[in-house]
Length: 125
Image (cartoon, rainbow, N blue to C red; front, side):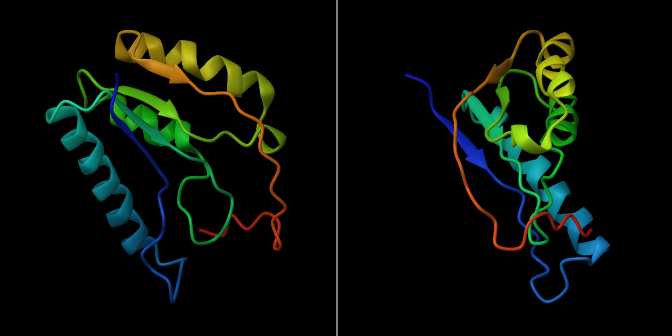
């Protein structure tokens, strides 16, 4: 059995999701949580992908790459990849590249989910 966490990077600036200082701090806290999960022995940490104003994880691969540089044992994964919004070549070539950085500690989860966003894409950072 493996134990892990799947997470999203939500903006804590509910009144102003474009507040870049708070958003930088929120991403830093997320990376600290991933490091802590590695230190306490969790097996997996996944970051989801969202393209809405209140989320900061429209590019989870970048967050995972930053986490890979700070962790040693935990497996990192994209918990959600929005294939309809992703470049398919990049979506499928990132995991092998991350394996080079993390000694083969990347997991790929593939599922089909259909969600209709009321507001469409809102990557306003």
